Image (cartoon, rainbow, N blue to C red; front, side, top):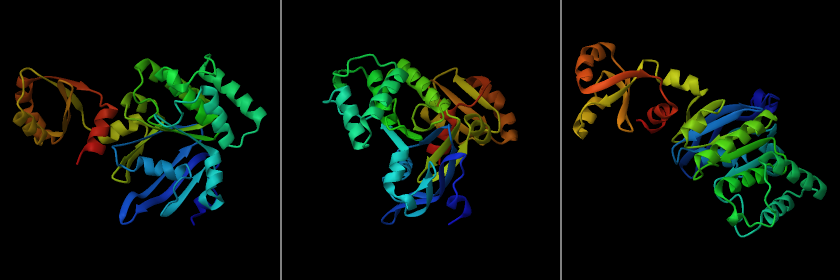
Length: 313
């Protein structure tokens, strides 16, 4: 075992070294290594099937690694699965709460599963309701709650036992933009209190609010940096927005994507985002492009990064 993993650093809430998870001959996670600082909001992004959920299952103590080492809040599998589970909270967009139970019954049930002392449970419930500004009766069924409120109660449920690390797996899917904004204000409060937030999302505006982002693709970690750092390293050359002056045919778009003047050329609504490639080809072809498009220089978005690194070939 490496010296780093024998003695986990107090600065890190999560440490992963050479993590591999196999299902038969298939590697769902392949030699992944990263660390997450205490109090960090850490984004974990990738397309479906990239290995995100499998990695999170390991970090929550639900699945043992095939190879490699993992420590969460200073605890590894050598200390026992249950101890890891006691250090983490988990919330997903579905399955966190039971719709046919009341708010009070849901939290009572979760507290009993965690074997929480009754006085501590009531104290934590009061603190968390104040955090999320919940003022509805505990006798309301979860099914009666608006989507944004249900999501906030789910967060309270994940935090009930006061975990050091909370995993939020696409927690804002299907709720309104206003509810998403309120939820992210709560995430920032939680991180400011010292807890580590590990979040997956398909909303790039949410990913922008993470301190750092890890990108997964086909079981491998392909990039890890701040949002700004990912943009700079992925697109070191200037990026432009192309607005067609006339309707383009599919064959025209395919031809542009293959043009050596571009290292990246992708649709973005009714426009296109393009990053320059070979400079001589770009300079030579630019007058032709300007005849077809309104062109302006822009800053790359995280969506551009995601498309290029995660969905590209």
